[in-house]
Amino acid sequence: MPNHFTSIPTTIGAVHSNYKTQPCKNMQKEGKCQFGAQCSYYHSEEERRKLIDPLPNLPEGVTLPPMPEKLRNNNKLKIAK
Image (cartoon, rainbow, N blue to C red; front, side, top):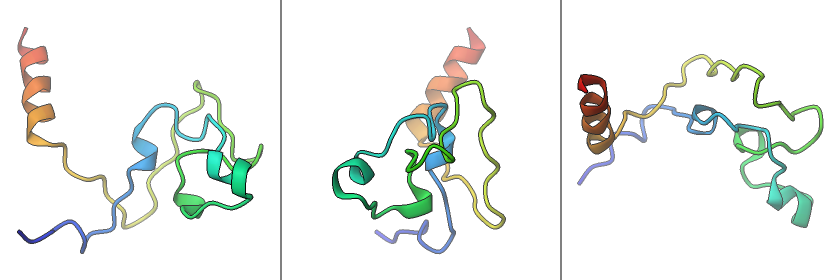
């Protein structure tokens, strides 16, 4: 089965509300993080955000992955009720 998502740059880190609100465990333990700037957790106090802070905009040319069919159907059911 071909993976058609690899040709389109996507980001997943910024889709959840606690993005960059908790420290990166990799950075704390190892002093480095394989995800770098794409990590969902903060590496320094400058990167840290509060839950009430707005989420950052997606970088230009980056899109969110499509919502899985199962979740999309569940959301439609909730809205219809």
